[in-house]
Length: 206
Image (cartoon, rainbow, N blue to C red; front, side, top):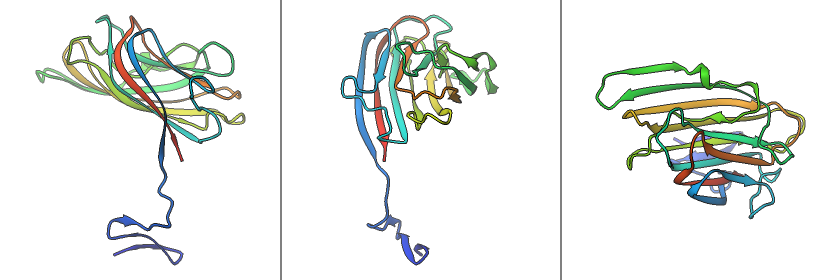
């Protein structure tokens, strides 16, 4: 049975009608880490687009591996709002679920120490991935309408990390940059040491 709206067939036999807008991801930029302290996406630099071309941008960070094994060493993000510093004011909430490999402990709940309340520092996105060969963090960050100069700029992230203590941590972060200026840069880093390896891809959502 097809899905029909206002006389137009939107979905039939599991496929969208050819005349219906399907949306699309446009790959804008790929950065690959090699012992880098940060990876930064800046509008207008190195072919990066982060303006009103799209109302949503998606960052996919894949197998981000830290150089060190210290704790805390969360994978983090921060935002630039027109100046040269990545220090946009943010309010966020952070919660997670984790499970140890040996089944010794599980937990689901808020990680209040990773919340931000009108703060300018980096925002943690993950648990503390170790630097063993099988440990890293991967996930997705959505940034909505960064060039808007009326409303706060919302973002949300889902990530999973394999931590140094041999556990899986699924982390979820949501919040907003509480600034009227456009967000024109996004920077990723670990809290300690370099990004040993990993790839971040920036997409625009049509």
